[in-house]
Image (cartoon, rainbow, N blue to C red; front, side, top):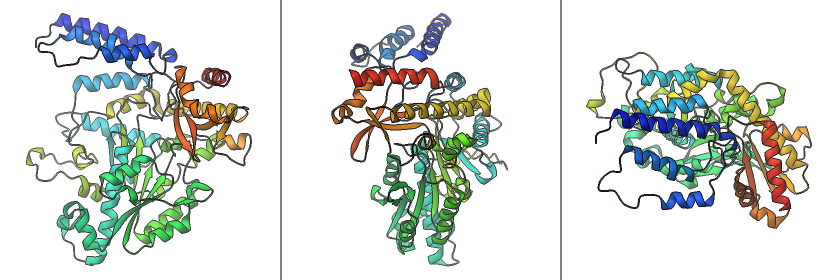
Length: 510
């Protein structure tokens, strides 16, 4: 498998020209590939493993000419508003190429052999500074594949914590060390010894990943219980929450929805609410986890214009034991990248410690905060996810990221205002507030439907057929609805609003 210098030079030039052309046209890049491009990409795929390889240059040409045209513009186009996808800042894109070039594994902290783990820790510290978190409060911090895996880590730590407290209560002063921990005993044995029938996850309007995490961890999807307030389902019904917490043979994890997926709304909006949750956790021995995939970035917003939104992400550090977040959304770094913060060093060690692996014991003794990632999460091997985060934060700084998010919020509010005044559309959720008061609660997601029931059934597909913008559908109050989720760094409130108007007017008239 010989590759000559000329081969490498030729392929690198080909990739460079292709990348430059693709990125330079991102503002006009279609959100979805044309049907014929998808068809050609599918038919052009290899059907069997070749006996003799095709060679480097033909393979790269195949990727560029055949497969590439079949990809969506989900991160390239600023007008891809499906899910909460994010984009790629130029600094993050280029840094990711370096990640692949060096192919570092960050599983073990080897400071005398590689700077990889130090770079990641520095990136996490800068990220915490952007989000206005005090690092000393969060001694365990790590990069993950995304908010879903971070939610798994949060519930895993919560499961360990709440059962350990019950075990300690049952045993009195008897401490059996690691042998008595949940991570050693297993969930069923720990529950039996603690006199617990179930571990419940109490939350409001949970993201589907929370139920997935509960299933993975053996708690069961049915353990996730919605204790939302009637008429404002995202807010906690505090009396109902306390009644659930008081069940004698239940251990409890509370999860705060910081950025609900359909509306972008928040479960809490005041210091008083957060402290009330903290008091209940202390009273009943509950763990508090924050699902902050994209909502946690509202902490960067300041000023009266964004006060209502920012209040949904503030004060959470006063009560939270763990926080999940996505970097490949509003930080606009490549997939896959999330982050996890935890207040309790001992809990993460109990859950994630790699036991009985002498070959992974490097003998390096450090007094600093860097923990080998294999003992701080589920993966024993992973790529250097933190480098694009480091690069993008270095390149644009706090002011750059605040500007990005402010543009995204203003654009979302401009779209909401347009929809609210349009005869053919209904802005959701319904609210008694009018005008600017209603818009002040808009973060980066705009939920709406067509007033005509027939059009509403086809609304998502008709918008996406334009290939000029893309939205994702959902169900709201038992009826189809459409979501515009603004999360790309290229968002332009002026030009993008005109594009949205053009597409939606054509959908209505056409």
